[in-house]
Length: 134
Image (cartoon, rainbow, N blue to C red; front, side, top):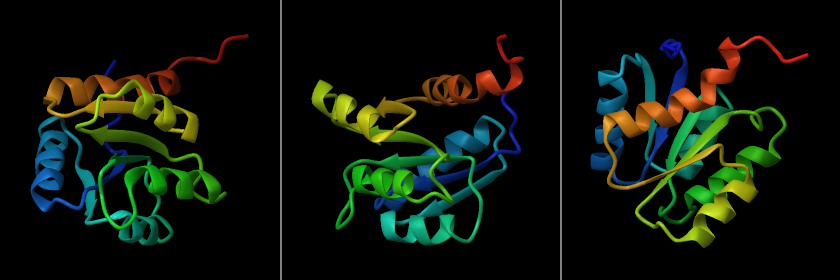
């Protein structure tokens, strides 16, 4: 199944280098509508002005973490259904569980490659192309 590449994606990372790496991977995968935010607060501001289909956020940011961002998104009715992938160097099971319980749709542990990113995104949007089960 091909991903609908016109989807809009917001990459959130306080490391401009990491944000650029993820954006470049997304562009290699055919995504054209990719924006970057240098932190959670700016991501929320962007999301309240523009619709995004997917947020890909680093967990470890300051002063507001990716986990905090996820909780803020899920608490805001206007943006609460935005799909969310958490990215982190932490592979602790507790973190994965916490992210899932807070509403993360998927979780990626650094380092990762374009194929891993592609599979994670594909799994989020696969059901949209399938007819509903009756």
